[in-house]
Length: 335
Image (cartoon, rainbow, N blue to C red; front, side, top):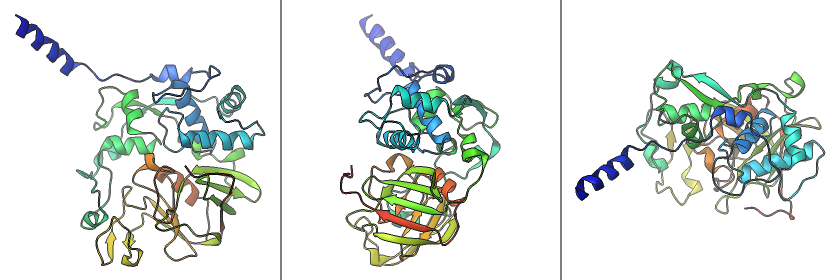
């Protein structure tokens, strides 16, 4: 009898459903209570703040429902742009009120999965080493879940929490996603061209301006000790969608053993993501990434790395010849 009871308990544990996160209604109605959460859980108010920031063109990077480094950077940049006090705790009642005032649209909405979302082809697994990528026909997503999460600027964990029990591989299935579609609308309903870019090497951020107006803010990964990002001012020399990645053995990246040049085919999981914005220093550029959760948290190979959706947005409002200034403020420390 005891063995039977133990077996039933174990079976119940095995079939227990995954714990769901906050639902769409809870997030859409969320209000800031005056104190920013410090734990690592998904919080409705933080999801709402991240979506509103994304929509206002102050990118928090990957929307994950947590008040992490990139969300804090976006909140501070938003507060500065609105003339609000910038505190050590970047989410305040004043900042929240200004954020909510930017849009009345729901931040979580229904979305019907399309045939394109599930068509693939999908990789069985993304190789960890660059050398192992060169033989692949394309560097696509590893699953429909990854594809849908990136489409809506979300972490896969948040997407799964909003849709417990869903596999995301069935066209026609209705799921809950971040409402970032309206983020393509530019300030004041216009589409200003980017005339200047500022890369802050210390803060790990990118700002894009139309003349003197800040129109885009992005968290970024900027350079490394192995291959530092250049200083001074460069210019945009090329803007390439779906780029190939060409490894130059002269770079001698420590994780690459090959002493011969090789090429990796395009795709969102290509080492430089969906866009390459070439700069006037050989081998340097602004590009996307296969791992949006690591933006601003892991070193790059000397370039400026953004999420795929952020570099896509930047590239579409950019022309060759635009100046890119690299600055480093001594008062700030790289995290």
